Length: 193
Image 1 (cartoon, rainbow, N blue to C red):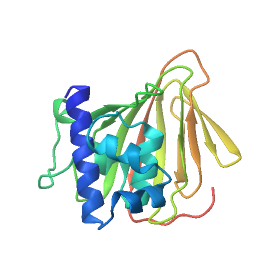
Image 2 (cartoon, rainbow, N blue to C red):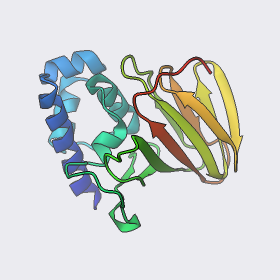
Image 3 (cartoon, one colour):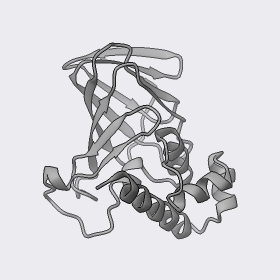
Image 4 (cartoon, rainbow, N blue to C red):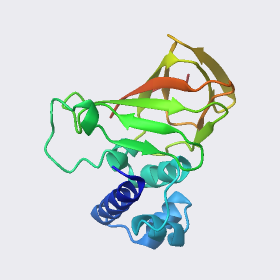
């Protein structure tokens, strides 16, 4: 899917999720900290949403980024072929993510494959409600994961278990692209790392 079509699909999906939640643009703006004008531009596909902006909107809507990017509007599937897996690229950082798991998998597990370019940094605000747990498995390269004030450096083969109740930043301090898998289990509570 080309970027313009993806921007339109993401905009439609965000608007659908907002209206299903019974929120006006003003209410979503107040809840997310994103301006009403910016939300409107994203919903109308007049602007490409960044990872940081989508994170704020998803947290305010109580949905995951995968709910928006995967654009799952069909019945659950057991199999999703590589060619059918939704891809999304953050226009600011170049961060790329591929939603590898079938939409609405019965297991409640989501698998996201991430390519983080050399020197890139992607930050996420903490989730206030309906927080979920994740594991990050490094496939290639190295990344630093900053969770609040704690920094964890990961290399190929390392696996980190963490939650999204605190601010999280993924940073590639190296000169090589990094690839990792994020595995998310919805509806699980988690203690401090």
